[in-house]
Image (spheres, rainbow over the protein chains, first blue to last red):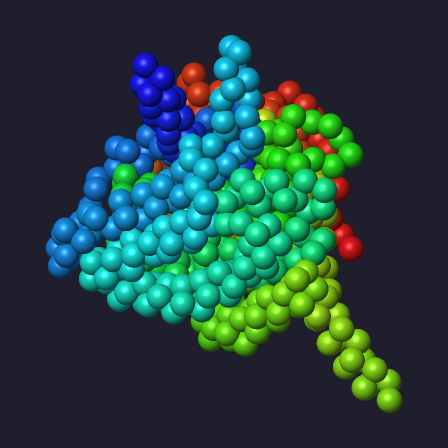
Length: 328
Length: 188
Ligand code: SF4
Ligand code: SF4
C-alpha cells in the first residue's frame, strides 16, 4: 500500500512538473515581448486580451494550425527526431532539481523534489549536454546552408562553454562536500555561495548564457546573419518544440544559478515562505536574461571561442585552486 | 602621462564591466520611461497640422456656390493626370464644372492642383483615412468633394479615438485638440 502511494505521488509530481514546464513558456513569451517593447519604448503586444495577455494563446493556436513543412531534400527521420531530442533533455533534468525541502499537505509531509540523487549535479550536466544533439541534428537534417552553419556554430560553442561551466561548479561542490543539490542548498543556510565564489558565479553565468543560447551568445540562431540558424526550416509545432526547449533551458540555467550560488530557498532578512524566495530569485534571473537580450549585441563566433578558452577556462581553474587553498 | 592613465582607467573599467553596466542602466531607464507608441486604431489618433495634404475638397463661395470655374488648370498641372473636369454654363452665365472627378488612387498628394487653381477652389484637407477595397470607390466626384472636411484648424496632437467597424472602418473622435506627442520622446 505504501509503495503504491509513494509511486502515485512520484507520478503526480512528474506530471505536475511536465505540465508546468510545458505551459510556462506561454507567459514567458508574453513577459519577454513586453520587456522588449518597453526597453525599446514600445508597448509590446496590446491587442489580444488585456494588455495582450492572450497573445501567447493566439500564437500557440497559430503554431498548432500552421502547415508542418518538411523540405524536400531533408533527412525526414532526423528532421522529425530533432525537435524531440531538443525538447526532452531539459524536461528530464528537472527531475533532479529540488524546489524546496518539504511542505505539509493534509498532515502529510511532501518533498518538493522528485528525487534526491547524490550525483544530481553530474546528472544535470550530463543530460543537458544531450540537448545539443537536437540542435545539431535539426540543422543537419534540414539540408539548408543556414541551418548547417547554425549547427556548426552550436558544436563549437558547446565545446568551448561546457568545460568552463563544469569547472565553475567544482568550487561549489568543494564547499558543500556533496554533489546533491539538496546538500548544496543546505550548506548555504548561513552564507550564500556567491560570497565565496564570485568568480565561479561569473564563469557559470556567462557559460549559462551560452548554454541557453541567449544574446550575447545566440550564435546558433543569429537572426541577422543566419536567417534563424538551425530552425530556419522548421515550422508549426516542431518550431514550437524548439522554442519551448529554449525557454525551459533558460529557466533551468536560472534555477541552477539560484541553487548553486544564491542559496536556493534560503532567504535573507525578510521571512517569506522558502518556495516564494526560490521563485523570486529565479524570476530575477529570468528577467536578467531578458534584460541582457535587449541590451547587448551578439558576440562574433571567434570572440565566443576566445572568451571560452582564454578567459573563462583559466578563470574557472584559478577558482578551483583558490577554493582548494582557502577552504581545505 | 594622462594618456597612459586613461588607458589604465579603461582597462580597469573593462575589468569591472563598466561598459556593460552603463548599457544595462540605459536600457533599464528606457524600460520605465513612457512608450512613444501611438495606439492608433484602438485608442488614439493623430490630428494633422493645417498644412497637411490629405484628401482634396472643393470650396464654396459666400452664396454657397461652388467656387470652381472649371478652367481645367488643375487637370493640366496634375502630374498624374488624375483630375477630370468637364465645364458647362449655369443659368447665371457662369462657367462651372459639370463633372469634377479626382482619382485618388492615382493621386500622389503633391498639392500642385491647390497651387495652380486661380479661383482658390480646390485644396488638400485633413482627412487621411479613406482606404477602400475597390479602386473604383476611390474616384471621387464633385458632390462628394464638396462635402469633404477642410483644412485642420488646430493640429499636431494625439486625441483619444475609437475604432468603429460597424460600417466601413472608421476611427472616430470628438476631441478637437490632443496632447503633444513629442512630450513622450526621451531626450538626453
Ligand atoms: S495633389 Fe497632385 S497628384 Fe493629386 S490631384 Fe492634385 S495635382 Fe494631381
Ligand atoms: S479647381 Fe481650380 S484649377 Fe481646377 S478647374 Fe476648378 S477653378 Fe480650375
